[in-house]
Amino acid sequence: GVVKNLIIIFDIPEKKRRYRDWLRTELVSFGFEQVQKSVWFGPPLPTEFLQYLNETNLLEYIRFFKATEKDLI
Image (tube, rainbow, N blue to C red; front, side, top):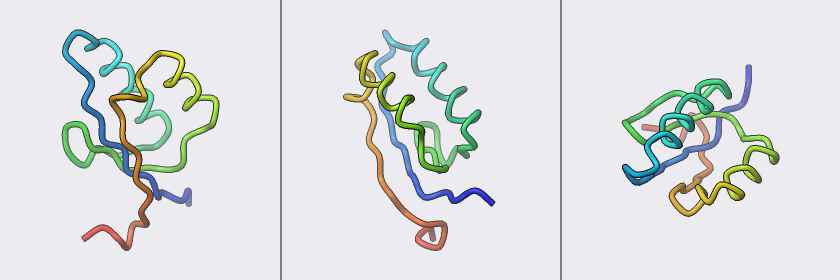
């Protein structure tokens, strides 16, 4: 299967709600699973997607952590 080793936590302001909703949809399409409301676990993201997040000024609201499934308790 696909290696899942990325935890994404985001806090996108209400005024950017459509970006928040869009990001959730994109994460699902990449194979991410929701852990909590704004905490997601999934595979590495494509470089192009990370560049787009940077261009749309969303990276400042997102944190990335690497982990393995066995790291999750």
